[in-house]
Length: 414
Ligand code: FAD
Ligand code: PYC
Image (cartoon, rainbow, N blue to C red; front, side, top):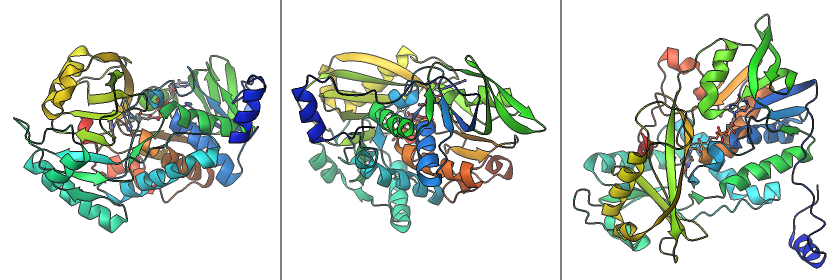
């Protein structure tokens, strides 16, 4: 793989950009791999990358039914933060956030990580208590956040109305090293690095069945034939229930549509990310100038990648109270993704009843921020059978009643 550098850009400018090579190869599937990962979203690709980088396992295929990054990874609003309440969550999200800091250099691919700061507004007394509690927990966990008052909020976000008619801003939890990254670039960067290690990324290859002998996984049926493997990692977000069904077990996951929208581009007006969980809206400004806006999940299970219109109306109506300037924005486009939500709002990174088969899902409305940490831990789980990062997130927690309640941290979307 050719190294991307300022020198390479200058060289290609001089020869009319004829020397760039494809970022990743498109090989035909082999008969068998050591490891198959189903799903070429951020979590699947990051898992493959750390299997190769940390454990030297490179006979790996990543199978994707559509195009890589075309699921939730390429549809999300890219908020990165690690201000979670419970210790296992803070550990995996902070691992991810810290890996994001140097991911561009690590992958030699500009993922445009922008640690511009993330705030979650407290607009009710319950939120004040919830976020103060989280800020205290974060101190103990070594995660840098602080609880700030309304005047500091106004200083950081001049366009905000802190005296809203229904929900005045009472304070916020602020993570100065949280921020955003370019979502596609995260998938593309990992894919390029995986391909460089000799792994196969096979797009337009839908898994339609899971093969097992004597309770052990042996391969998958796909729209491009049967492919064998010793280990299988299923990383398919909203489709996790279907893959589990193919293998003969059930997952405690509900799939719902979550939407986002962007406005026309405007001059820079807000250089931090703001989440307003009570009124159900969040907003940041992209490098192009568009206001990137999202709201809550649809109130019923579905597999549409667009969502219901009334949700957009509710989100925008709610945001207008806190950001009056939103009322004058024209919206450019809207889309949805199918998110995989668990009862305790925490992910599942786990062995399964099928020997050699693992699942990584349940990231729901908040998994983009977790991609590097999830890939790191899930690769370790698949390679060694256990990982300190993923230990608490096993399927067994649901029948042992050991929930990892993150409903406050995930608040905006449920
Ligand atoms: P995906 O990116 O969905 O990848 C799964 C892949 O599996 C897909 O490409 C799919 O095509 C493939 N697949 C499915 N079935 C099969 C099959 N049978 N065979 C082969 N391939 C298959 N998170 C944050 O942290 N911050 C945010 O600001 C944020 N905002 C969001 C806003 C929206 C509108 C949405 C929808 C999500 C948001 N999220 C956010 C959540 C985040 O996007 C997801 O948690 C994360 O991207 C999940 O990544 P993934 O790799 O698990 O899934
Ligand atoms: O988890 O931070 C988050 C988030 C923001 C918008 C959707 N999810």
